[in-house]
Length: 383
Ligand code: HEC
Image 1: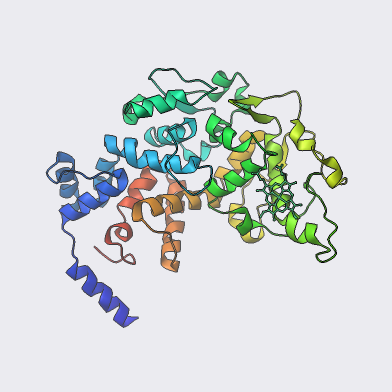
Image 2: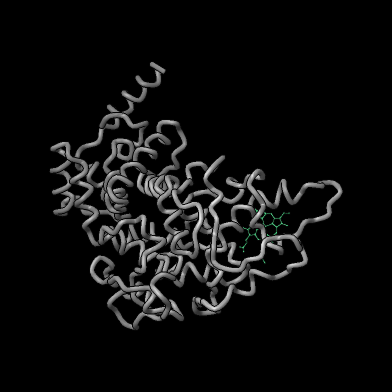
């Protein structure tokens, strides 16, 4: 241990960074662009760094156009990757634009899955619920996201009640990935990946009650694995089917998200003979079975409710949501997954800070970018 500390000390001396190096590194990581050394922003950041005020330096960078148009945009796009690989290749859409808008306007991120708010641009062609042209053409013509994003209400453009709007969960992009093919379980799977930073494989737990598992999840008569349903299927489906009730009235119909208040969508009752004693969905109630075991940190004060809006609130007020957001920001800015105990503790601290800062995403970026841990690339050593 002593030898290791000594080596780190040597390394940090021999690779000592000047305040200008730090300013450039911080700016590049936040904005994903290379600044000119003599640019006024780098000189201002350098001044803050010389005064030991790293946070103010980071705040300069988060005011730049590049932060909104490149760094933050790519962060927001990684939430919309259908393959859940964090890819940034997809075009800008209502989901990524909303993440950027919430960040720019310092809106409480714990409402990102429940608010009746989404962001579009003040550019033409106008926003449409039936295609993504509005966002794609704005992006292709390099509209400045720092100045041209405007907040709008999800309920008004979709023509449903405000109580049916659930932030990102009711954006067209999320709907296309979650409510089109299949049985709306993809919505829970996407939530797990994007907002809890876990896969269903990681959280499955066969001790969870199977009470909500629907009739299409067949109980396979398999002599070699007699308890397959309980040991394998209900580990995932117990919690997934418990939550998918929230989306019982949502569907994505080729081009457009559809909300039908009059009935539970037919896909909730398909293949009923597979498991005749399975759960029958009659309304949009949901239960949250994530509050114990390996998912204890996913606990929320809301353990049941009706509709996507309350489920969204249950998700974003859990500790795991804050941890996941912190982890995503850390990975983006510090270019690594938190793997050591010390890094994991740092993520927990960031998550607490995020919550205490009224879930302010911009501050989360600034805090992580200005941390010694991110700047030195070492185990949190002093600068
Ligand atoms: C690791 C988690 C996991 C396990 C274990 C699991 N499933 Fe699933 N299952 C899913 C997910 C996620 C979906 C939704 C896929 C989608 O629509 O993208 C799904 C969807 C389904 C569907 C609906 C298919 C459709 O048309 O949408 C059925 C039926 C199903 N699973 C049956 C089973 C059975 C039977 C077992 C046990 C042998 C099982 N599953 C085990 C995660 C799991």
